Length: 325
Image (tube, helix red, strand yellow):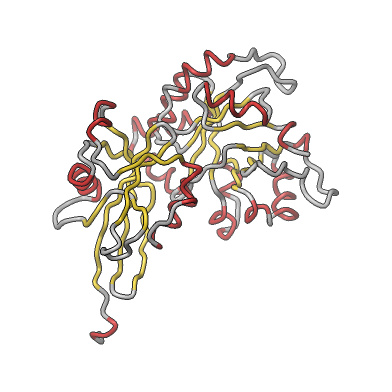
C-alpha cells in the first residue's frame, strides 16, 4: 500500500447516555482533532476490550459516573483524511440517580429535540438525526387516507413525524403514491410493513412500530432464546423502535428491548375505541415514570395537549384527527 494512502484504523466506543428525555454532551476543545464542537463521552477501544467495556471505562474517566450499557445503538465507519474510524455507539443508562450529582463540570444535559441545534463532529451527524425525535406524531389510518388529494391529508406544520398505520393494500398504495413523505417527515411504519419495503425506503424509515403482540414476542424471545431473538432483531438493525404500551408489563417489555420510544395509551376514551376507558393523566404519569425512553401520550389527544402531557411526564403527543388539516 502506498504510504500516502495509508489510513490509521481506530475503534472508538461512544456513550449515548439518556436520562429523562435528555442526552449528555460535552464540549470538545478547539485544539483537539475535530474540535470546536460538542461530543458524546467516549474514546478509543483498547486492546482486549469490548466496546461495552471501553465505554464504561471512558465514561468513568471523562464524566466521573458509572453507566450500564443497554445496547449497541449503531455501528459504522467514518473516513477522515488521516484515519479510518470504526464507531460503536452504545446506548447507556445511569446506574444510580445519585451518580448524577458526580458528573464533572463541562458536561450538559440536552433535550432530544434540541440536538440539531448543536455542532458535532462529522462522524456523529447520522446519530444525531436518529436521536432527534419530533414532539408530535400524526397517525395515518385507513379512515383518514385519500389518494385523490394532492397530498395525504395535509399534515399540520408543527407535526414532524408520521406513523403510517394502514391495512396491506392501502399501505402498498401509500408507498406507490406518497413515497416522497419518507424524505419530508420522520416516517414510522409497522414491523410487517417495514420488512416488505425496498431497501432504499427501509433506509429512509425513521422508526419501526411494534404492536403489543410483537413487543411481547420479542421480549419473551430475548428472555428464553437469545439466538432466536438475535435472528429476529437482525431484521430491525439500525432502526429506531417504538412500541405500543398500555400497561406496566408492556413498559417492562419495552425497557427489556431498549426500545427508543413508546406510545402509552389510551389517555382518554376515543371514538375509534369507545369501549376502552381512558386511564387519565394521573395514571399516565405513574406509568410514564417506569419507561426508560421517551413516552408519547396517545388516545383522545390533541396538538394543544402537548404542554399538559409534558407536565405528566410525556416527551410528546400523538393522534389522528387533530394532527391533520
